[in-house]
Amino acid sequence: MDSAEPLGTPNKDTENFSLFLGGPLFQLMLRARLTDDALLMMRKRVIVITLLTWLPLLILSLLEGHALGGVAIPFIFDAEVHVRFLVAVPLLIAAELLVQERMRPVARIFLERHLIPEKDLPRYKAAITSAYRLRNSIVAEVLLIAFVYVIGIMIIWRQYVAIDAATWYASPSAEGARLSLAGVWFGFVSLPVFQFLLCRWYFRIFIWARLLWQVSHIRLSLVPTHPDRVGGLGFLSMAVQGFVVLAAAHGALLASYLANRILHFGVPLSGFMFEIGAVVVFVLCLALMPLLVFSGQLAATKRAGMREYGTLAERYVRAFETKWLRGGAPPDEALVGSSDIQSLADLSNSFEVVRTMRLAPISRDDVVRLVIVTLVPVAPLLLTMMPLDELVRRLIGVLF
Image (spheres, rainbow, N blue to C red):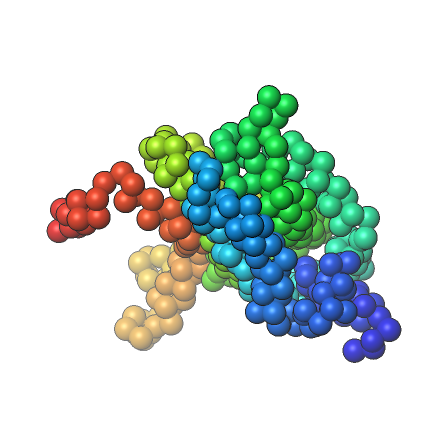
């Protein structure tokens, strides 16, 4: 690849779509030798970001005497901060590589399966070009940084997320929370880095959803009898599988948020059912909602298939009855071994495929997988509601 042209530019390869091989942050990491054109060197990126976000907090907390005690929530006992920077951040970085591998062939498959009519190829390539342009936008990432500091830190974190008690990062006062030295680094370096990575993920999903929305406005050549039961769009579920690690990161963040409030303030896990449900729904929307843009075309394809294959089945069944049940078959033609019966079975199978077409390229397994992965980090908190032996006895009682 010509080094003079940025990686993944549409002029070089409009069919090899990538959400991550571009943008100011990617170019910065590329020059710093923290990544390459395949998003490898993941361990190196994790170590560098951890040294930047988590390690200074530990050092400053030790210097201020807030690492092990001295405040209501010392640094060592703050589950939220450790999970955020030692678990969630590595998962966010790992998710980029997984989604990259799952999503990269998608744009090419649209062409390989002839889903895009030839007359609409310019529109399709223009949609990909537009996605690249948005992905590489310097203005977009600058706005993300501004959003993180103005909205994410000054409003959301300070007013809704920060714990209203003496912690390693802040102490309440009449004038408002007073940040410690560790709190200054946390509020102006560590937390913005984390929030930027998270918001950058959401922005990439927006680009993905926008691309699919533009493609859905092209009249696709869907096949109602395709065995994937979504007209040939079943390959889009590969992208959904890539969001599993992102779901795990959100589950870990949720678990750490709940753990702090359960362990330090005695709030029972049952008091957070709304928060748990909201995060699960949010993760499902992130991963699955972009695929719903094809529902209109899939519904139209199903209706047309039901009508056309219904008419074909009617003609065939009447001819079959006339031949085999009304004496239309020649006297010397044997029923046993006749291909007519197999053809009738094949037509019935084709009609059943059309009848059971789904209205979105989403399977039940995709939904179940995302829900389980999101909730697994929360599962250990069940031990705060009852001892392990009691939990095991109840589980055995339910299963056996």
